[in-house]
Every structure is written in structure tokens, then in C-alpha cells.
Image (cartoon, rainbow, N blue to C red; front, side, top):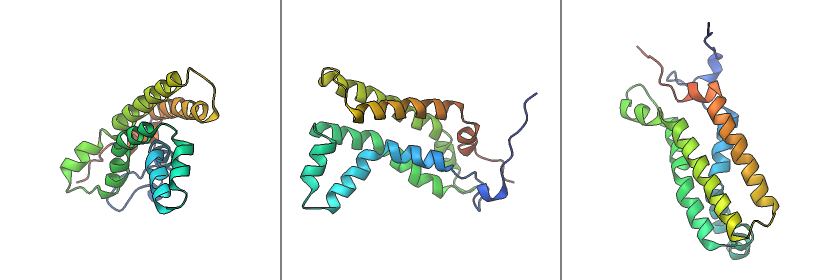
Length: 156
């Protein structure tokens, strides 16, 4: 027999939707790291080229990271727009967990490709990225809270 998990009233927004947990927000930030680096580099005009070349030595990696991270940025923005009247948005956001898992999988493949370009030489950046992506994949696939976050409640 499976018991329903209940959450406190504070964990729901004013429209009755379960808010994303802190871990899910941190996961989205990790997946959108190319956007964060791009914004920080754009803000510091004097250090932008040095910062970008330090974090993304291959310029195509930044552009690919921006492209892959875009669905996560849109998802994180759109989740705050859920209301019972926006049925179409709720339907799209019900696949948010699947979208996030897909982005994790693509970033995992990109990191492996980057490692193959460097002839599998160890570096901490790629090692921590792979570790974070594996942890994130396990978290997204096993967390009941994540599943419930993207479930549209029966609001009558």
C-alpha cells in the first residue's frame, strides 16, 4: 500500500501548485551555468574574454551550453506563471521533469565529447560536472517531490 506524501501549506503557491524545492532550483542553476557565465562575463567588460576563455576554452562549448540550457531557463521562468486558467501552460509544464532529464542527458554527452577532445585528460571541471550530472539524474528520477512539483492538481 502506497501512502500519499503531504506537504505543508507553505510549500504551495497561491494557486495551489507545489513550489519547486530548493534542490530543484539549484539543479536548474547548475544546468543553466552557461547562461550565468555569459551574463557575468557580459557584465564585466574588462574581464569578459579572460573569464570566458578560462571557463570555456573551446568557444563552441559556450554556445552549445547556451543552447542546451535555454529550455531550463524557460522552464524555471514559466513555472512561476502557472495558474488554473492556463491549462495549456500546465500541460506543457507537466513534462518539466522529462525536459530536465533530457537536458541532463544532453549535457552529460557534451561533457563526454569535451573529454574526448582533450584525449580524456583529467580536469576538475569536467570531473565535477560529470559527478553533478550523475547525481542530478538520480535525484530527478527518484524524487517524489520533483514528480509532484510538475503534477497539475485537481483544482475545482
